[in-house]
Amino acid sequence: MIAIVVGYLIKDIELISNFIDSFSRGGGILHNVRFELQAKALKQLFDYPMGGRQMDLYFNYERQYIHNTWLDMVNASGIIPFFAFTAFTVYSVINLIRFLLKKEVSIEVKIITAGLYVMFFLFYSVEPAFDASINYISPWMLINGMIQGLLSNDGIKLDFLRSINEK
Image (cartoon, rainbow, N blue to C red; front, side, top):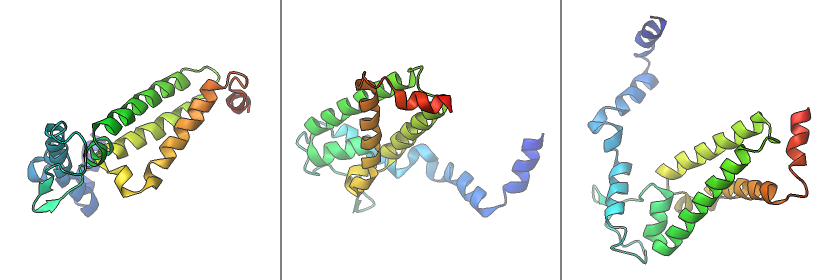
């Protein structure tokens, strides 16, 4: 009951109403230009295997990015770098899961790390991170390197994270 009253009271705030309208305008969020461009790119994935930005991505007479880091990579560089980056992505997710399953890692560190990964993947799914700036992809690479270092260095045995747990 309280949620209904609060919803009724805030629906007239311009920011809230714009947000709600964005889900229904033009057929809803799934009919967004980004998703249409991603579907168009998937259909052309093997038509241009060497990349070179040859895909037909015109929308409203304007050439667009695909707004997906992996698909923008295949458009720019081809399927070999795309598969290499996809393999790296899978490898990093496996390392993340291994890291999250470590008993030595505090719950706070696990939540922060998992949250960062979710944030990165959401961003990379809707923006051309490599094309925009290397600054968008560097933090994810840094975190991947830190996790790989913590997992592969058995001599340390995650003493750094164990000391965080003791505080």
